[in-house]
Image (cartoon, rainbow, N blue to C red; front, side, top):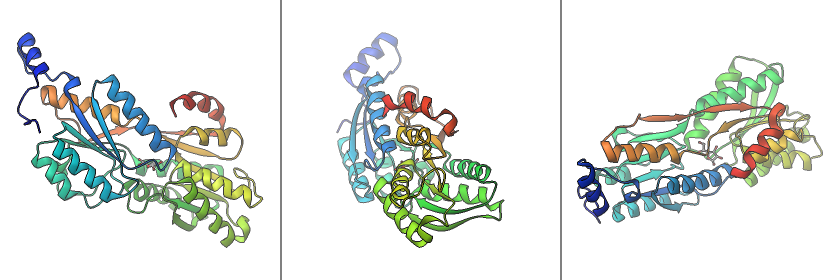
Length: 320
Ligand code: GZL
C-alpha cells in the first residue's frame, strides 16, 4: 500500500516542472462501492461513472453489492486495504456506516457518498455527499399529482428500499405535499425495493385489494422502474395506466418517458445519473490543492410531463 504522503513518480516530474506539488489525475485510483444494478437509473449511474473516470484519467474500481450492505462494507474494507486515493459509496441503507467509515478515515482516504445519504453521529467521517434533494423530489411529484387530480385522489405508494435515504425522504416530501389536500390520501404503501419486478408484484396485490384497481386513483412509485412494473400490473388487470390509474414516479429513465409518450404514465422527476462526475472533480481538487468541497453537492431535480415526453425520450435513450 503506497503511503499516502508520497508523491508518485509522475507527480515528482510535475513538481520539478511547476515547483508545486501536483497530482496529475491519472495517478488517482478510486474504489466505488455501488449498490448493485436494481434499476435502469442505477445502471446509468454506473455507466456514467465509467465515462467520467475515463475523461478525468482516474482508475475506477467498481464493486456490485447486489443491494446488500454487508457486501458494500466488505468492498470498502478491501479498497482501504488496497490503499486507494478515494472511496465512493452509494449507501444502500442510511444506517450502520460509522465503523467502516472510521477505518477509511484512519487510513486517510476521503469518502464521497453518491446518490444517497447516511445517518451518522460524526459527519467528518465522509468528505461530501453528491445527491439530489430527495425530499424535494417527493414534494414536487406530490404537488403535480394534486394538480392533475384536482386535489382528490386515493393513492397507493410503492416505496423504495426499506431504510434507504431516498425511500425515507421521498415518502416524507410526498406526504407533506398531499397533507395540504384532505381528499388526497395514501391508502396502501409497501416497498417494491426499487425494482420493476418488485413494483409489479406489490401493485398486483394493491389492485386485488382495491376492487380490482377500480378504487385506485393513482400510484406513486419512488422510482420509475417500480412505476413501469406497476404499469404492467395495471394493464394485466384490464385497466388503462395513465387514465384509469395515474402513474407518477421519480428518476427520469427513458422507459418512463416512453410510457408518458404512449399515454401510460403521467409524470416523473428527473434524477441526474451523473453523480460520479462532481465527486471526481471534488476529489481531484482536494488532492491537488487541498480544496475542501461543500458537504452536500446537490444535483438538480426537474419535473417532466407527457407534453415533452417523446422529445425527452429521444434525447435520453443514447445515454442509457
Ligand atoms: C436515488 C437513488 C435510487 C433511484 C433508484 O437517489 O438512490 O436508487 O431513484 C435507485 O432507481 O435504485
